[in-house]
Image 1 (cartoon, one colour):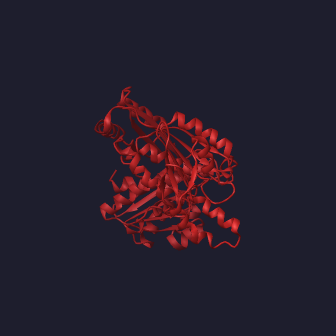
Image 2 (tube, one colour; image 1 turned 30 degrees about the horizontal axis):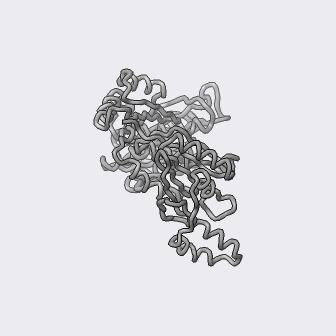
Image 3 (cartoon, rainbow, N blue to C red; image 1 turned 120 degrees about the horizontal axis):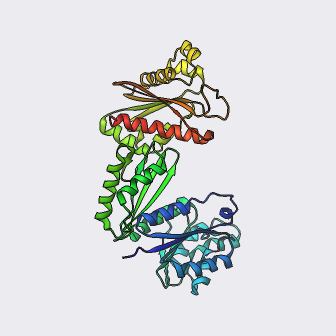
Length: 407
């Protein structure tokens, strides 16, 4: 059976003019894809009622599900309700239950016109299913279309997310979500070739490879193979990729590191120079990181390396801060100072200045210290400062992962 199709529309002049970064498209599309729905188009539309209505007329004819975020609030430029009513040719009706719930918000305003604008959020498309607002005041709506359904969600991400979570469960009923494998320390092209060797040109699985600095995702979609078949293909691909594949359930590298540390009874700490705390930030972004992650010493200056990590001054003078000797001393100093069983150190030249013939921009030294000893690695990363720092943080996490796995 062919997968349902979907289109995503984000509404707001602030989005199309670049005043605000659109994150809703990514979140909604990912929820749809995980539910086994094929997203065929995503578009941003300004606060223009006629243009939005025309866009919706086209999309509801092309897609089974159309999800719209934004334009449901109380201000003059919130035109999504009216545009949708025009596109579908159905009226808006005032919902007395929603209106009663908004009354206390309307009462806060001294100007009657402002109060009335609050109550506009109670206008619902005739026949629509209301999604009560869990955060904020604007409810969502689901209304039938000739092909399927049109969904209206509020624009602020924190208000949109809880309503989207409820819909995701509905969309996913009976669908096969994609299999997501994640890899580190390998190129996008190498991952693609290895995966295609396993797939062998089969038409019942679709492959997408996504790359970010230091991280490559293999996404496998069900195009007829079925849930069990897709799981089997994913296992074969993971086996072909071997240690390069760190996750078969979509977990991030930081999540994988923390899980392995927890399972192994290890504690973690970092000493970071050129990455400026990026490794620690990735780890602490994961809920529950404090169970195993103790902390980080951002030793950007030589003085901090000497005072906090006890790197010998003579070592810095002889070898320089970006060296195997200093990386080793940083990792061992961090393991002692933070009282952890496993410590990572990163020191390098991110650029744009500071490089030399012997140590060009992009030169980075890593060290991982544990009760089993200290291991050091040097890498040369091409790219600008942002790329060098991102790749360094990713490789640092992967070195922790490999150490925890005994690789």
